[in-house]
Amino acid sequence: MKLFDLTGDVAFVTGAGSGIGQRIAVGLAEAGADVGCFDMSASPGLGETVARIEALGRRSLALRGDVTDEASIAAAIGTLQGALGPLALAVNCAGIANAAPAEEMARAQWQRMFDVNVTGLFLSCQAEARAMLPNRRGSIVNIASMSGVIVNRGLLQAHYNASKAAVIHLSKSLAMEWADRGVRVNTISPGYTATPMNIRPEVAEQVKLFETDTPLGRMADVDELVGPAIFLSSKAASFCTGVDLLVDGGFCCW
Image (cartoon, rainbow, N blue to C red):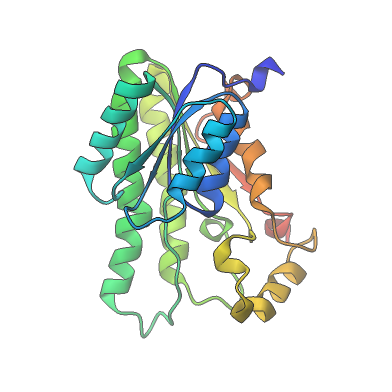
């Protein structure tokens, strides 16, 4: 359907080397976009993401850097626009997760979580908006988490939960600042998703609890994040800004 067609659009995806970010980058290309794929220099999967996009007949670039480094994001977007054209779409997936009891958590662990998940996301949005606002057109989708809305039973991650709540409210704030200049900002809050972090043998018993706690009785596949990302990026969501779209298998209903 033309409402969901991204042909002719240039997209930028952070965290594109693995998991949700990789699948969304490929999904945007499946919908017709050319995609700049941004991730850490050490990411082994970035080349695979680019190859999968190019196999679809779309243009792609591997862009390496750190979302906490303002200069590297700006340089990546400059390279992207020089090679592929004006930036129209962005999906910010870069983030980290870990756990520790709150009373024992080192300040450095807390700070690193916010540096990447909140400051890194803000710097990404800022650089993307600087490219989009002069054209009065653009969509930014930020990957938050249902953990920004609820507290996960059994997971000691106060810092992660707080960072994802900040992502949701930051995105709403940016949406309101840029609404009258043609740039929409929305979030997707996934529930438990079968990414490499959640399918390791050592967390198999915990995964059983995740699935039991989810009304649909399973974790999401990364493919199931593609549709929401395309929707929020496309003309189909032209009147949606400041929205937090829960993709959680019904988890937050309980």
